Length: 494
Image 1: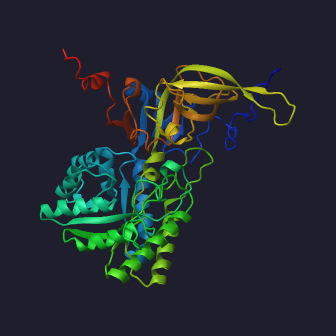
Image 2: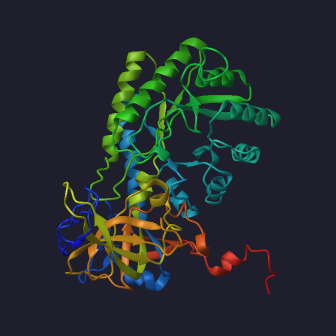
Image 3: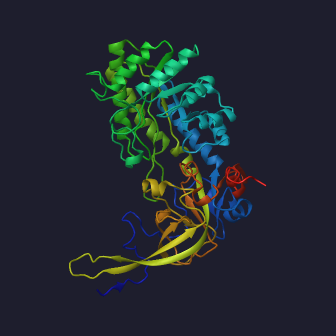
């Protein structure tokens, strides 16, 4: 079959997804993907609080996570202020727990505390970070679907403010451990309200067929007529070593629409009222989780914290009035929405390669046409951002070390790992003159990138730099090859 080759053109490539438009200006930083304080200087170089990416590379190397401390603090404070204001007349404000799983180190834990937030953890290691950072146990929560006895004991040692129980089995173990210590464990029950969040299958967490939470569906236990959630309430109120604080749910992550949060709140408040009537139990707290989306690409439209807060408050206010119950103290758990956009990853470009991709004719009888797709390899990859391969997550990128007048070229930013799925940015228009040695910046990498990083192919994990008021400092040191080899016990160190 004869193959035609389409000419290079600034028009949209047929290989690009429908949502990806050709930028009018490849040199412009498109909000809201970037942190406040990220700009282009007079020579077209990306800067953060006045520090250029070339200076960051020279001082810290690449790949490198670059975080705006001021932007993190501002976003954390915005959630606290917005929710306190929205819920002031309902329950006196809101307890905001930063979801440490998104990104956690001792410096971040301290920022969280200084901005008036609490900290949500989900492992013994995250509890250890909180302890090292000096966070009071009363301001901590412990999550997890498979907490070990050691983690439960550590939580009790630290006198954490809440242990979020995920199953009937775990509730019994927490009660037994607390009883053996002569203590009372403060417990919340994580429920699955059956709300389908509009997000990726792997990060939707409120449907029935998954590992988290106690089902609210009837006949979800062997005891006929009872849901697992109701059985847990009955059991928790019978244990002298358990103080049942309330209910918790989390419907998923990277969610833009408010309807899922509203429906979950209505279901949990209805359940709370039913339990109060049936068991005469008052549940003073309600955690509505997190999962608020951020902008990874120009078409993402995240909601401001105040808009989220007002929408959720309206539902809680009206539902409590309808049920005739006193409103519980509400808490939320934003993670990505605070840290995600504060950070970009800085890479150096290495190998470039352009391939030709066949596109079938759109009408019968038309011949295939081939179009170019350029592969831009950088010095990181799936070891510092696993989200594209895990969730088909989309990101963007910009030429960060200079401006360019070259035409836009559809590109795929890939890493250096021995995997064909090692993709950092699946589809992005970059200048046609991008070359080895240029620096690329990928925004929106604060959440679940460093946290999910690995040493695949024995790559050392990158460092994390915090920038504030024109000064940059390491808050997580990048690994060295010596760090990796120090754990290898096969050959004695000499």
